[in-house]
Image 1 (cartoon, rainbow, N blue to C red):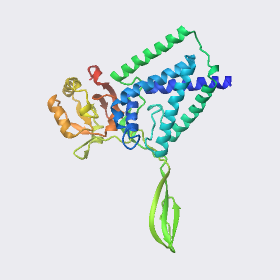
Image 2: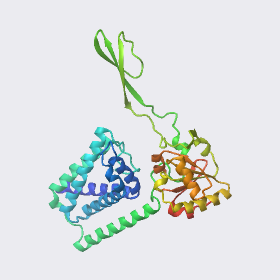
Image 3: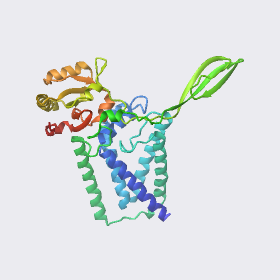
Length: 364
């Protein structure tokens, strides 16, 4: 038991710290994931959606702290019981997500490691078993340092997590794990290799033959049956290749401008996924930067999921000399964690990406 507890202590502690730090690097992204869980049709708790970011911050900081507390042996009984409560909740959440196919990615490791719902549930079950071992063998968890040192480590950890969280919320994630990171080419991210695996489907054909129901399963071909066709059910038995970027479009009045815009040698995108939720004061800075960019030959476009009327109203209010195009809201949230934000591109390659607090640092 002593060695089993030691292994569990290290494994669980390190995993909680890694998982927490990845989400702490992007608490806004984790809050978007929580909004999915809180939405209608999933947990049906829309009243919590306005508090998603606050809950996200608390959860990820607590996750990191519990990992640290476990490793240094700080208040073992409180620590392991808190870990147990958290993993029971996460296990329920991932099981619900997997069984009912509600949220396809739990966000356990942010955008760094994508897990399917069942993979997430399996991971949580393993952690649950290890944490139960820690609860049973809590007497074997001894502090690594004295009480004062342990208190200091926990206090410094809280401070460090808070400062880091404040920084990434007011700028951008320190490490960008998304397919729209600086240096990425959007066209390449949307391309599908010639040898990419194709999706495989199974078709269950239902017929009435001699007054009885008969089901014939094929991989696509219509079966030769002397009977009356009733129905067919299609099941994907093997997923095909999905490019990292698969939902990026630039549209206006029903016309797709994606290819043309991504061929621009000097392009600036002003991204605001929801103009009603944008930091309005930031548009004064956007005006200054975009006016300077226009003088230097840049093509400027706005990208939002808001209506064209909202885009026109913002352009008029802040005297913006560019038009807003439509792009899916989830896509815009994935591209950059700022509302608004500015991207500088060269023939589809992202050269600069700035939070609205940092747009004065854009180099043209």
